[in-house]
Length: 166
View 1 (cartoon, rainbow, N blue to C red):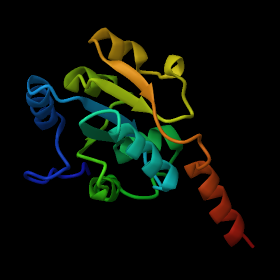
View 2 (view 1 turned 45 degrees about the vertical axis):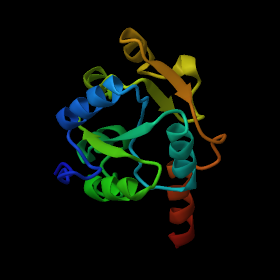
View 3 (view 1 turned 90 degrees about the horizontal axis):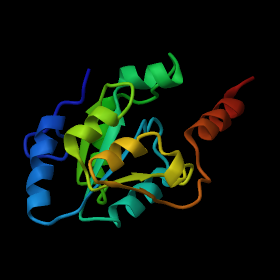
View 4 (view 1 turned 30 degrees about the horizontal axis):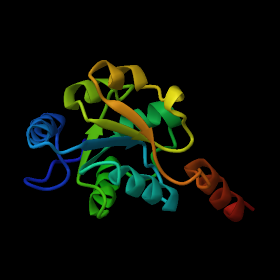
């Protein structure tokens, strides 16, 4: 089930966001785009998103749908539903909008929204961002944001499992 948009709220559909981004661009505002599974939210995510928001005027966070996370991470994932992940992200002060995407990559959403900046975490370099060519093709730029990666969902899951295994 895809996270239901909230009328006038932070969780929006891609077409709604495309119209919002166009209005923001016309007003001279800078839009920043961040994406990920955000399967088990942790302090590293908050630091990444806070740093991403500091790059511009508006932060849009795109999250993988439940089906997309399963394809990427396996049948045991996601740990939280897309609606729960969207609600938690929308509650963060640094996040202006949340959108769920179901495509194998985020490229189609980037082409639709055309944000000024795509922010990725410190586990990337600007050259290694998978969507880099898409962002550059419409005149956007890629930026690396956040603290050096010292948190990982994979590591947290391993720690939890190790503490509860007999």
